[in-house]
Length: 309
Image 1 (tube, rainbow, N blue to C red):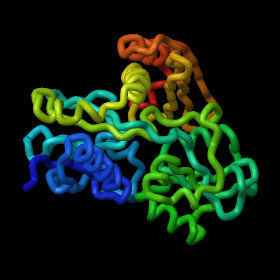
Image 2: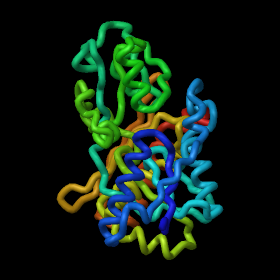
Image 3: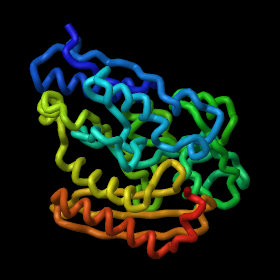
């Protein structure tokens, strides 16, 4: 008999992430996988495929319906890709748990070139991410960077059909789907900075649900949480969403939490960057991310942000 309901989107990647959560929960508590039902919830982000997310509501399009089901009690927990989460959550909901983070790098996929630098002049490159689009235009202003919506399998098919010469996808998602053989090259995370939250699975619960909080507590990965506390604080300071080309990555190395952040204009020609480090505790991580976002706001000036709203 089902004891808990796990809410998720219906894409292959989302289902793989929900299955990973179910497997971990069953193992740590000595339960059966069948004790956890995976409930697929259709989101506006999945249904709207012909327009950029930045035009139709941003990150919340991938979570709103799931969060409505969570708040109403129809599901007990929700599994998300952290990079798809809004920087501020609805009242009464919180991220209780982060699973161990996968690699954060972006992957370059192309049948015609081994690297971005090797693409022919004016080649068409598809991406639905404003961050990736801006970074591509920064590196290669000559490229024809186009909007490229759809799940991973749809994007791979478009690539193979020749609709674009190349695309970029998260290495973590390809790994979770067993599709790493599709990768042409991995991009250096220091020069092609990833999205805040990239590679991390988070679990959202109702704030007042102590039973589910206790269930999930053994799954929370402390190192991932530290990094995401910094990255999400950075996003909040910038009021970041899918409307904004923002990159940011925190990592723990030799007992120090380091962070790099970046904001770009959509054409990639205006870039503001920052780097910092702090002690490995949640309060310091949050403060560092907040400070980094505030610093970039100050450096860029308010005129830079007017087209974000």
